[in-house]
Amino acid sequence: MLTPKFSLSQDTKFLFVEIHAPFIKISEADCYVTDDEFYFHAQPYYLRLHLPGEVVDDEHSTSQSQYDANSGQLTVRLLKKSQGEWFEGLDMLTRLLTPKTRKAVLEGVEVMTTSGHVDSKAENEVTCVDDEQIEAEHNFDWFVEQQVHAEEEDVILGPKYGFAKRKSNILKDVSSIMTLMLDIKNPDHVPMNERRILRLQQETEAFNAEHYLADYFDNEIIQENISFHFDDLVCENVHLSQKEQDQLTALPFREYLVEKSELKCVYLGLVDLVYAYSYNYRFTNGMENVESDWTICKLSATLSWLDYFDNIKDVIISCARRSLCFPLFRNWKLFIRVLEDVKVIFKNGKRSVLKCLLGIHSILSRSESRYPLNDLYVTDYCVWLQGADPVQIKSIAESLQKLQFSKSDIGLNLEAMEQEANELMLSENDGDNKETIQNIDALSSTLSNIVNIKETNESDSDDEVSEETDSDTCSSSSKEDDASFCGCMMHLTVMMVFRGSAEILGFGLEEEFPRFPRFRWLPRLQLNKRAMIRGVLRNENSTTCGRDDNFIDLR
Image 1 (cartoon, helix red, strand yellow):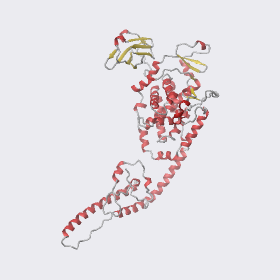
Image 2 (cartoon, helix red, strand yellow):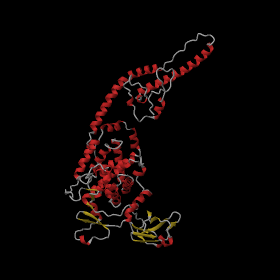
Image 3 (cartoon, one colour):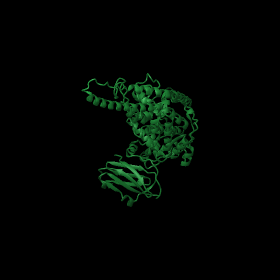
Image 4 (tube, helix red, strand yellow):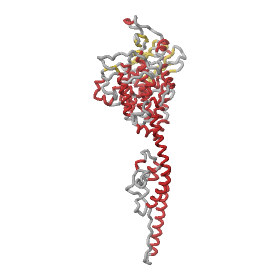
């Protein structure tokens, strides 16, 4: 049997189930409900939904269902048992397809049972608790490092990794793409307590002070990324597209046994993943590119080093360090802007976070070398999040708002580096101001010598006086125009030098004016300035102005 595509909507009185089932015999279709379960069957489709609230099997309501034979869309209307009740999580499609569970606590393990009752073998060891008690026990303090009993790792299975540390000794099957997929080498032989040390060492070695300072001073393009606003990702009412809904229905229906000691790490890993996706989303202006999988995995310590976190400050410090070490734009203000996006995403709830995870899942599924990370982390996160506690998601947003940290916490000596660079720039600018006036006069004199207007000699022949007079008149007029044009360009050049734009001229004046060498012009030139200067002078021996093939073409 096939599971059809479906979606749910509601108003205060009815619940609407829209099912895409083309080419069915509507006379043979069967729909019925039992409390909080909905069933639909029509060859070759079968659908069973576990609703978040109860509905009534009302023949009058179901008789109002409609089927569009052209589009194959069946709309079933169900009457709510409690009118006015608002059903939560109707867009968590994987959760709706998964049988409801009963929570119990078994020696520190959160057990999700599908049968609706506790296993008889463990009924003496299991204590059933209500939702309020579970919520109180799972009310984490995100700022305090958990004191977990230090147990030796399983010698047979090896170091653990993956979602909730559920997997081990499986990466040997993808050894051919290991170096492209992960930064950590031999993850099946590196203990968990050594991963953090190796990761910090890699980040320190990868940090490039010149790259950071270049983006610190020359940040015009970065400012455009910072100022861009994304309504589809950080808005309050986020909607899942049809493609994302199809992703949810294709996810596996799984149950998770998550130990309490690991549950906090799972939530904190969620912050790491959302930050990596948000950075890539802002960097690409909401459009994926061929480097998106590299960017997301490189920024996420979870995906690149299989690392785990004990408190929320460690997560943010890791995101900051990797944002300043690896991507193209390494700017502190850009990191802060992305962090603000993450705060809004968690504040808006599970749907916004799930949209980010589905985006990561889609990007990695198309990657040639990083697709196994979906099986290790992202797929499980997408399924687990749909049943996660929304209160914990909101508490993460509150903790991010309260979090206080500075550049000194990053451990890359950013403040001292910026201070020295600013002082050096000020001293250089003072020296430039003193020499600018002198250089302007000398530059004006040199450009004047380039224009050499020769006077024609008077002719000795009286018969050709009129012709030579007409020729001299045209030549003089042409030369006067050339002289005027070159004079304007000389004035323009001097003004641009005075305004600090000599780097775009490229007139071959490096020998006379070492203060304006060719290497000082920036690659991000403004088109209007280039158009004003492009090809305006010839060499010194020419009698007219024009393009010189020896001059630099900055196009």
